[in-house]
Image 1 (cartoon, rainbow, N blue to C red):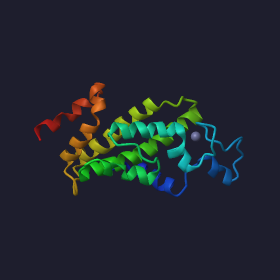
Image 2: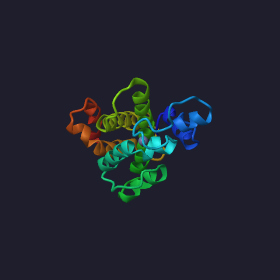
Image 3: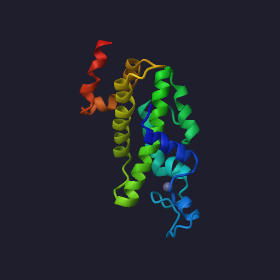
Length: 184
Ligand SMILES: [Zn+2]
């Protein structure tokens, strides 16, 4: 469902194997501070960096709102299960879960951009990036590979395109690739 790099990232995150400041500190790296580089208020653990930082929660809230999901606790299990509040098909559930994984991956990339390249933290930009990449990585990928042993790829595309309506409104360049949907 998602690229290998995302898969590996989530596996590492689940085992606290990301170089967040607390982990670097445990390994004896000399740091000025172990406080979150985003908010500067709490120690940077994996959970804080990916979910509980107030600057990260803004992104999750936007993603939940995008899918029309009522606010939920922002942690891995709650987010994974959040789709159950929608009357979603199996394909929709798979897409949502893939989206949660991709969002974690891209939130971490954004964090690194901020830390190492001093770029600013912009939830709207991050969310747009998540929408574009998740479309590319989930919908396009699954459509092209036709690896639909459990879900029809056209169903998957349709569910995703419905959810990606925001991109359509923004006249995003990915729009033309959605046209094959019309004949199903
Ligand atoms: Zn923080």
